[in-house]
Image (cartoon, rainbow, N blue to C red; front, side, top):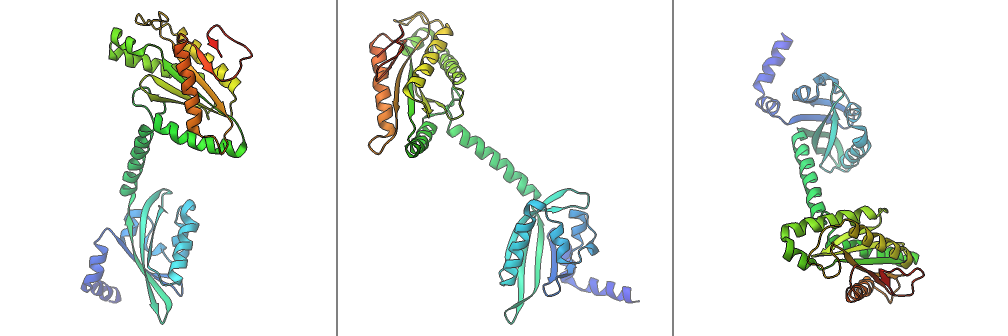
Length: 323
């Protein structure tokens, strides 16, 4: 008879019927005893735990993913003690050992300035989290695209500018040299005129791939600066090291043996390069480093192309280099 009466009371309570027919899972916790006074039966479908297994606040804490457990529990305790409504997203443990992303929205009940109970709703946000992960992945892809040249795949000018600014500041603090190699594909306009722009694009892709393969350190940065011009930033590298690497680049491009009937200096695609090295100071800037390398590139072009130029003396002059 008692069970029948309880059943009739439940049927006569439209609020309870309404709460238990929603996807949101209602609950109430006695803050004084830390005992659950109620949790909706929908919890069984979502997490697999029986409705009567939610006895205390500790049951709730134990069913939070270890990575979010302490932070979530501390947040709830602190906010509840101060009478502040709050919400928390976390992975809830399922009865079969899996996890479901949920959002707990909590309303604090108080009497005479003291917290007496918590009431709230648990929402399944697993699909939302999946979508957030997809969007985050897409945003990372977009960010990556915004820092890389669409044609060659190497860094673009935007990434070069940001990286140089950071490396310059670091080098200034540690008083270490920074070197820059500016590289230009010789007679590239004539290459496009003879072979067409599609072939020209393929040529730039091969050049970029070859130059990128020469750099070995993760701190070195190859970027397409514009058109047929590339820059190679070399942190912690002095002029001598930069010259060695520049010569490797020049030789590697020449070794590709890409035919270039329009070249006035060689029958194959070649590059010219200007090298500059500086130890940063308050009187120097990355712009000065670039301008110096650019002047050396102009000198390399003026002196016949397919060569490297830099400021300062050379200990090992090459037939392809002068200084």
